[in-house]
Length: 301
Image (cartoon, rainbow, N blue to C red; front, side, top):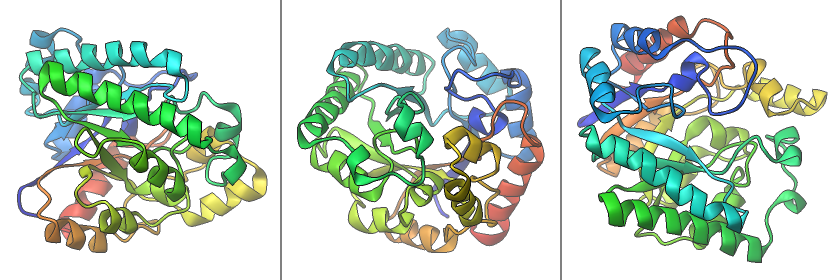
C-alpha cells in the first residue's frame, strides 16, 4: 500500500461522540497505546477529548509521533435550523486543526447519529419508509454543502461525509441520495466498511460507483452473524455495538484484500483509519487495535 498511512481513532477506545454512560480512557493513555502499537495517526475524537488549543494539540500529538487525518463533526442535517450551528462547529474544529498545522486533515461530517429514535432502534434493518423524502434530501444535502463550502472557503480544507448506522445515511440507497443532492466538488465520501456492510451494502460497490468522491477511508469489519442476531432480538444500534457487530479486522465479512486492490488501482493516497467502535469500558481496546494493525501488516501491506 504505497503512500498510504495507517491511523486509528479514539472511538476504538470507547471515546465516542454519543452521550453515554461510562467513562472512556483519557487521551494521554489512548495516544500512548496507539503509538506503542505502531499507528501513525489518530482522528481528533469528540471536542474536548484532546487539547482544544492549537499549541497543546500539536504538542501532545508530536510527543507521541502521531499525525491527524481528520475530525468527526455530527450535525442534524435533516433539520434546516441546525445548519448554521453546524457551520459554526465545523469552522471551530477546522480552525483548531489548521492553527495546529494540520491543514491537510478532513472535516468528517456526519448526521447526528443516535438521536433519531426509529433509526437508532432499527440500525441494520432500515425500512424504505424510514428514509427522508425528496424535499428532505434537498435540505439535508444543502446543509452538507453549506458546511463543506464554509470550511473550504475559510480554511482551504476538504469535507467528507461519513455514512453511519443510526442516522439518515445508512443504506446504499441513502448514500446515493446524498451524493445526488450534494456538490461533487465540495463533498466527498468517508467510506466506512463496517457501517456500509451493516447498512446492507458491499463497500467495494462504493469504490466502483464513486471513485472520484471517495476521499477518506475507515477500515471497520462487520460480523454478519451479530447483525442477524440484532434483527432477531430487536437490538438497537448501541446494543448491536455492545454485542460486537463491529468485530476485529479479518473476523467479519468485509473483503479487505479486494478493497486494497481497488484502492491501489485508484491510486489512493493518504490515510486509512482503523476503527472498531466499542462502548466506554467495553472489551480490550489495546489488544483489538494491536490485532487490527497486525492483520493489515500481515495480509494487506
